[in-house]
Each structure stands twice: as C-alpha cells, then as structure tokens.
Amino acid sequence: MNVERYICNYLASFDRVKRVHHFQGLTALPRMEDVATLIKSLMELLFPGRAKESCCETLECVIKAEMERFSSILEEEALLALLYEGLSQEEAKKRVEEIVDIVLTELPNIRTLIKKDAEAGFKGDPAARSQHEIILCYPALKVLAVHRVAHLLFTEKLPLVPRMMNELMHRETGIDIHPGAQIGESFFIDHGTGVVIGETTVIGNNVKIYQGVTLGALSFPKDGCGMLLKGAKRHPTIGNNVTIYANATILGDITIGDNTTIGSSTWIKTSIPANSRVMIPDPEIIITERIKRQPS
Image (cartoon, rainbow, N blue to C red; front, side, top):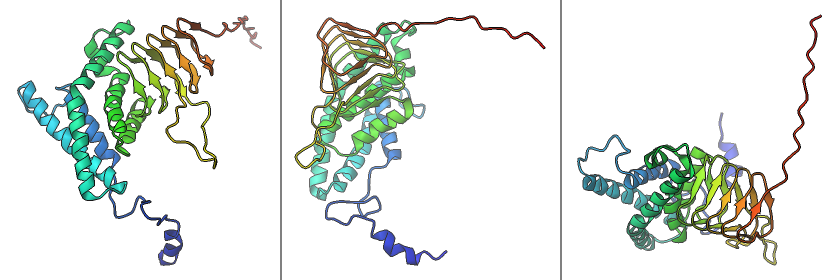
C-alpha cells in the first residue's frame, strides 16, 4: 500500500512544542533492554558470583570488573535521560559524573541495608533455610536491592531510569514500588505478589508486609486550575516495627504508629495510634451437608 497520503495527517498528531519530545524524535532514549542489563550488573555487583560468565578468580577482580561495567551502563543511560530532558551535552555529562559518583560512594551503605533486609527475611519466614536462600530465591530481596539504588537515582532527580528500573521489577515479580518511596532498614515483603507502594510512602525500620498490601493514595490534590499537584504527600507513613498482613489497603497521607499490627483485608483511611492491633471481625462460616443425588 502507498502510505504517502496518510503521512501528513499522522505527523500532525505529534507535539512539536519546544522542549517537549516524542519517542521518534532526534534525541535517543534509555531503553528497557539496556536498563535490564544495568540491573543484572547491579545484582552481580551487590552479590558477586551470580553471573556464570565471570572469569575472575578473586573477589577484588569480580568487584572491579562489575563496577566498571555497571558504572559504564549507568553513565550511558543517565546521559540519554538527561539529554532527552533538554540539558545540553556539557550540562548532561557533568551531571552524569556527579550522579555516578554519588551512587558508587553510597553502594557500601546500600549493600549494608540489603543485608539487613535479607536478615529480616530469614528471621521472619520459618520456611527460609538460610540468608543465602533469601538472597538467591526471594523476589522481594531483588526488588528491594533495585529499589534502594533506584530511590537514590530518583532523589538525585535523574529522569526515566529509576522508573524503568522499578517497572522492570514490577513486571518480573508483581511487586510495584515507586522509586520515590522511602524505606527504612530491615524491611521484608513475604510472598510479595500484588504489593503496591506509592511514591510518597515513608516506611520505618523493622517493617514486614505480606502479599496484596496496598500503600496508596486516597485522593489526588489539585491546584487552583484543577491540575494535579505533583510530589504532594498523599501516601501513608508506616512507623517502626509494624506488620501488615495480606490484602490490607492503607490509603492517604495517614500514619500507622509504631509497634502496630494491621490484620488481613482491612481498609484503613485514618491514622492508627502506636501499639495498636487493627482487625476486621471474623466472617461467619456456614457449613452445610451436600445432598447426594440418588442414581436414577
């Protein structure tokens, strides 16, 4: 088919406003495939020995090779993201150097946090046989490892890449954590499928949640023109030593106090004081005998 007569009308659908780009513009974008490679390198850097292709014989050799690989991919993807946002080549390169330096400097602290997450998982799950099992098998640990780096990139205002990192984890595990969420130490998600943690959520230390939990927004604040206010606090703050059981839904800018237990399938829209237990009444269970049909 000759498509020439369709092209003009189709081109008119693209936004040509200055500094507003479209996917087929002249500025390249970070790609999901490359960010997935970044995540793979990150996991090898955090937990050396996972990748079969490594030919290094010492830990120092593995760390050096993977840190060079990780930083190289991060530099490339960060540069593409910043150029796409409209920075000049010089501005973008300078900002990339700053961001990569911050990430590599913080990696020891991030790895320490992830080790505490693994320890919390081992202590909190009687089915786990070792911390190595938590690290190698549990989806929540990988999600948290990626999130803690993505959150750092998010706080440094790197566009696109942090969201792509967490979205890849969402696809892989069913756990959806916005990179803006602030998560304390010794955090564990048991099972994990269906967990949603919103952008402005704040989670304290020693918190454990189960599958299907939502820490979401109750409403979206708007400005005088009716436009959504970006970045406004609209998600819960979870205190220290809190346990949230399966399918609980906690909505809005509310606080769940320290040492509180939230029962399964609860729906919470108001703040809960510390040292509380929140449950819904047990449903009535009706058991009847099935009538057996006599053969005709």
